[in-house]
Amino acid sequence: MPVDFSGTWNLISNDNFEGYMTALGIDFATRKIAKMLKPQKVIKQDGDSFSIHTTSTFRDYKLQFKIGEEFEEDNKGLDNRKCKSLVTWDDDKLICVQAGEKKNRGWTHWLEGDDLHLELRCENQVCKQVFKRA
Ligand code: YOG
Image (cartoon, rainbow, N blue to C red; front, side, top):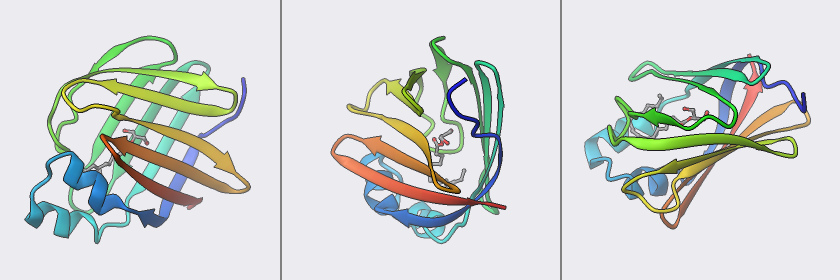
């Protein structure tokens, strides 16, 4: 197994979340609330099975998947669009492609030092988030 993302992680930086949300079509009022949030991620990694629970005071989002197995993602409480999602390893990076209405949609997770990094992509927008262990 390449790396272990398991743990509880707190957001410490969030670059261009606004651009990412705008690309997803999130309305102004919701974006205003969302960009104030400091979400926490609880990641459970067991072999090829993952659960990533992103929680905040406003909305929660839970994702479960197995590496290499395409699944239907509903993005409930986010933009609510359905995607066909697939997560694979690229060396020690976890890469998700979210195929659907939005072009170039997906995310990448990796570890850097003690930090968890996340790049969120939609169309021509890239949001960069960094988390520290809780
Ligand atoms: O994570 O896909 O770790 O699912 C992205 C929010 C904000 C709701 C959060 C709630 C996109 C209003 C999930 C924030 C903006 C704005 C906390 C990122 C949409 C709606 C849930 C994500 C992956 C990788 C796992």
